[in-house]
Length: 176
Ligand SMILES: C[S@@+](CC[C@H](N)C(=O)[O-])C[C@H]1O[C@@H](n2cnc3c(N)ncnc32)[C@H](O)[C@@H]1O
Image 1 (cartoon, rainbow, N blue to C red):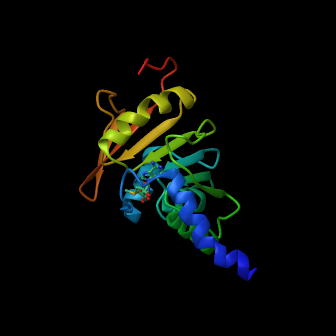
Image 2 (cartoon, rainbow, N blue to C red):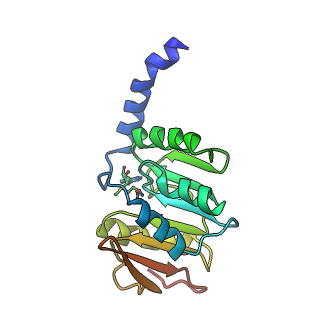
Image 3 (cartoon, rainbow, N blue to C red):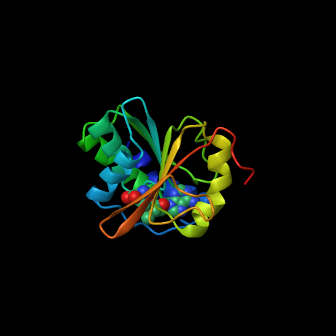
């Protein structure tokens, strides 16, 4: 047990080195923005919510706690994943959520019916083809603050001075 604990920082450091540094620094959505993103996507208990770059896990934890949805949080920073796991336990939703220490560009997101993002403009644009390719028609994508270039949102609202954007994956996805 002690040996395993002693080895943990090295394991995390090795994993971090393999995954590379975050493309976007950590900045949490506020509780109001978190709830508004989930409402904007119309999340229900039948949804599977993926937060790509999940930080401390608050979006998928809120989706589970307030709407009964299953959730998966993905973050490249192992410290954020540890915080997310601890927070999910504290909030009593550990059986509904899962957290993965992965690069969001490499993650398997096929089962998501809702994807939430709070990233940077170039990351959204680079992610766009993957969203359109991997998600099923009707899946919803919500982005905090940044748009998706010329992919027009279905709806835009403002919460706490920040824009929140909603898109729906179309039946016949555009090529890019
Ligand atoms: C602005 S924070 C958003 C946190 C959370 N989604 C929220 O809204 O409260 C961005 C998060 O993305 C993570 N991140 C940055 N680049 C990533 C990548 N390539 N793969 C996975 N996570 C990444 C960061 O570690 C950070 O926790």
